[in-house]
Image 1 (tube, one colour):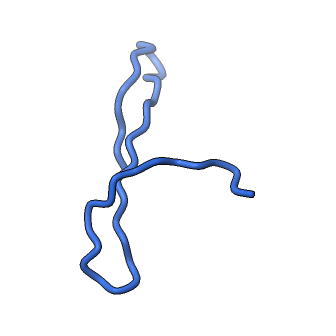
Image 2 (cartoon, rainbow, N blue to C red):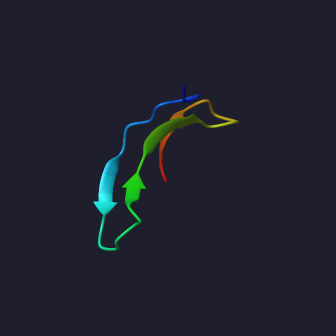
Amino acid sequence: MPKRVEVGVVTSDKTGKTRRVEIARLVKHPKYGKFLRRRT
């Protein structure tokens, strides 16, 4: 059973075995408390 399931968008699948997936997540700013969108 996986610890966490994430949903992403496949941005590239040009190579045979590798897929590039972009995952957007919300991160809280440490000083100001505003939520920022980060992509990996």
